[in-house]
Length: 260
Image (tube, rainbow, N blue to C red; front, top):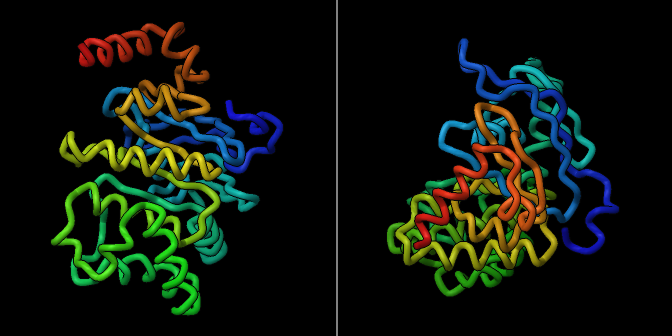
């Protein structure tokens, strides 16, 4: 864990989270704390609940029960009404989300994509939004493409723009949902390098990923999910050398066999 993080108070607190899709119990009594500036990677087999957990944090999926708290905003899952919607809105302002499929508006330029959220959702002055957007596009190496449209970008470039877009909302926490899974192999590295920079700059990050090398190198903690539960929670060095759960060992063995 990076120096100083262990002493910090949690910026994300998840308590007794359950999520059902009909009768299917997808998340089972999940409790989790994430400290400010901490990088937490979530790994596990497909269908283990990783992406659902991430989407519950910013209420893209409504939790069936439990409590989500981000930077002091506490929301009970399964509630309804105007007050609940207001709290959910406040949590979303504090969380930036990067998806598998980029989700850029095709009819807008790169710059227009990046300033849309700050101007429309946060009511930011347009000139300030442009200045902030250009700063973040520069940080991900995409300022030179600010007037291009998504159709003319590679997958890696689109994802870097998506990261800049999320950062321009000035979130407290960044959520990455398998951000490299839709990319060709030769483009994965450029996105992972940008994510490493975001982590180095001190952003709190939760990352659902199949990129074990990234988890091993960048994460402060790695969570392993299985059957809707967190089955292991450890520092990367411990997890990758001395996994406790047989399912974790099988996951790591598959990764290592793919390396060879």
